[in-house]
Structure formats: structure tokens, C-alpha cells
Image (cartoon, rainbow, N blue to C red; front, side, top):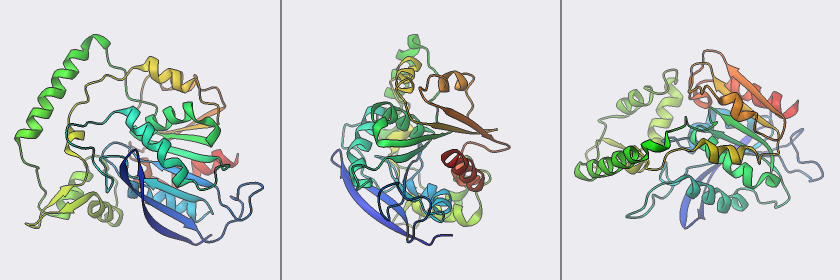
Length: 303
């Protein structure tokens, strides 16, 4: 196995300072880019909603030990990346532009094609990016990230109402703090029931900031807790899927967020695609099943 270093960076993209974590192998073997001396293949890791870059650590360490250079970042309003300013909000096109401007800072060689991996919301953004910038990619992997379920267009006013009410409620109440890191971990296990103690404690510390009274608050922007006003349109998402021309892997948890039309969505990809289901797994595969996820990804990229 290859030894690796873990390095943190801050890069400005779309006028926001982004927190970036890199797992850099000290030696490279079979994962070197063909024709480029001593350069490992890069894997970009895009986290999901209310998650953060450090959540990829279990998978990144496994891939870095195999000689891959892994890079993850906190999306806007998550982790240690800047929040949007007063009066702002969060929309998918913003994330796509963030990645567009981050990309040349994450990948120093302009000729390198990289592996892009996205979980959940990060998979949706990765799909859009892959549909626009396929020439920059070697492969695309969507981990429980084939887009959210459709929403009826005629119910859009209801989403706007929920958004308005949610923003008003957020501004009328103080931030809700958690009394201890143990309480933070309990909250995290609502979504990640199989999260082990060591990783859970680490992520609890990275996901929060300590307040003056000794309690803890989430690092993510509270505006993420509100209902987004614009409905997800499958027709728009399908147009991006149809533009993907790189080999694509979709990894789902047997007990994750499954969609009845996920195969139909994958069938729109204009390149070979593979679907892999991890038995007994839930939505947070990268935290809970890193060995199975790494094995599936390595088999896909080397097969």
C-alpha cells in the first residue's frame, strides 16, 4: 500500500473561500496518468447536502493508499467554506459555477482528466458538471446521487410558500445549540445509524463550531434548513444526463434513497454505465460502507 499525506487548502472560487482537503500519495504505481511522469490520477469528491469534505475521509484514505490523489471540498455554506452574503440563497447553478472555478485549482495539470465522484446533492451537481465539461473527466461516479424525486410543477406555489415561511421562522429564532459533542453525534446518527464511534466523533468536531458557553452549533448555513423555492425538474436533469459521454457508475444503498425511475435516468447517459447496489446499506455509503464502496469503484475504474 502507498503512504499518503493529508493537506488542507483554501481556494477562492466564485468570490467565496472554499475549504479543501487533499489526500496525496507519496508514491504512485498503477494509478499514474498515462504519459505523465509521477503524476497520480486525481479523484474529486463532492459531498452531499448538510455534509462536508471530511466525510469522505474513509473512502479517500482507501483510495490514496492505492496511489490515487483524492481531493474533497466543502460546498458553499457547508463546513469551513464561506456562506453566501446577506440576502443570498443556495441554488444548483451556483454550485456548478463554484466547481467550474475550483476545478483548475484542484487539478493543476490542465491536460489531466479526472475521476469525479458525487454523493447525493453532490451527485446532482456532478451530473450537471459532467454534462457540461465531459472533456475534463475520465469517469463519473454517482453515490446515491441520481437526482431528487420529481415535484409537480403545479405545486410550485406551495414550495414558495414553504420557503417564505421557513425564512421567516429562521429569522425569528436563535440558533439551536447542542450541549456536547456526544449530542452532536447522536444527531448525526439519525441519518448515519452505522456511524462508528471514532469516525463519528471526528466528524462531530469537524461539522460544528464551539460556542462561548461550551455548547456546539452546526457549521452549515442555517438557510439550508429551509425548503428551496424552485422544484426539481426531471426534464432539465435528463438533458444533462444525455450529455454525459464518460463511463458512469451509480452506487446505491439497498436501504438508501431509491427512486423508481433511477434505471430510466441512467439509460439516458450516452456512455457505458454500471449500477451497483450495496446490500443492507443506507444513504451515507461513504461513511458507513467505505470498503464496499472502494471495492466497487476500483472494479469499475480498472475493469
